[in-house]
Length: 323
Ligand SMILES: *[C@@H]1O[C@H](CO)[C@@H](O)[C@H](O)[C@H]1NC(C)=O
Ligand SMILES: *[C@@H]1O[C@H](CO)[C@@H](O)[C@H](O)[C@H]1NC(C)=O
Image 1 (tube, rainbow, N blue to C red):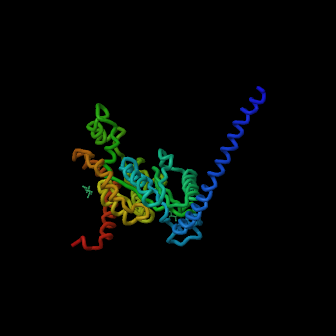
Image 2 (image 1 turned 180 degrees about the vertical axis):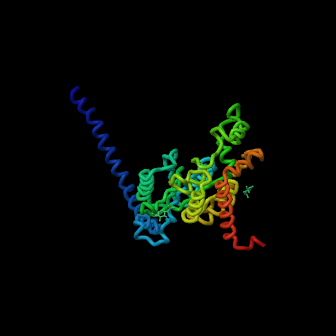
Image 3 (image 1 turned 30 degrees about the vertical axis):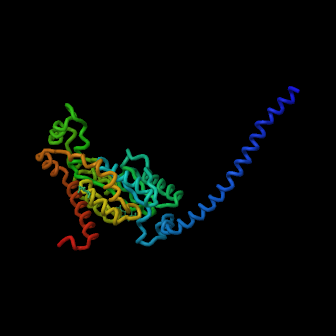
């Protein structure tokens, strides 16, 4: 009697398992139907993204026009230039504009050797193969020439800011040795380790556009400046300026609507109030003047980028603005 009862109890989990698995099978059937539907939907979607197929072609198969893909962006941001705003906006816009934003790791290393560059290019392409949608990526790194790895280049975008504000925003703190006054004095000194010296290497803005050649980091190197400008013209659809964020967003929205459609409205509605109260950094004029000479090529580049941005804006408006 007792043995029989035990057996019956033994059957309970077994029956329960059978019941549940039946339930599960029953449940999964409609899911499979949905999956089929999703697949056909995805197929439809990938038809509208037809140009994406170019991405996997080797460069030899491509037209000259296709050297740069319109379907993936790379925001290789410069530190201390307000990239957080643009990353936040990319993350917000992905839902509206049907793309995906990917934050790449490893941004503490910006100057990459040939192997590391190749790894980065591979990382891009691994993700591109897996994702049947447009993609944008961000990471700190000096410009990488995808063409030199026989791969189609992403459309680069970037954001820079006034070189002095960028440097001062790095100043270590508020008190004692870390105070701004101390930092300014130190910047002005001939000797010491926080002033800038011609011919030495620095992690300023130009290398992010010039690339991985050691000369790119050298302060006031004219070859680096020239190369940076050439690369901007060839690979960077838009380089924004933090002090001109409205214009930057306007150009981004017009030049790259697949990613930035609606960005100005979104920024003004949800983010503007957060940034409005940020006061510009006050730097004494004598320091500004001195640093402007010291950072000759950085200022040349900054002014040139600003001119390019306003030029792009003017083209968008036709010439009615100039009257
Ligand atoms: C990028 O690589 C291609 C192919 O090697 C080369 O023609 C081009 O000059 C390179 N651009 C830069 C800026 O190095
Ligand atoms: C940007 O545009 C917004 C909305 O039109 C305005 O409130 C804001 O002052 C502008 N910012 C700048 C720096 O022009």
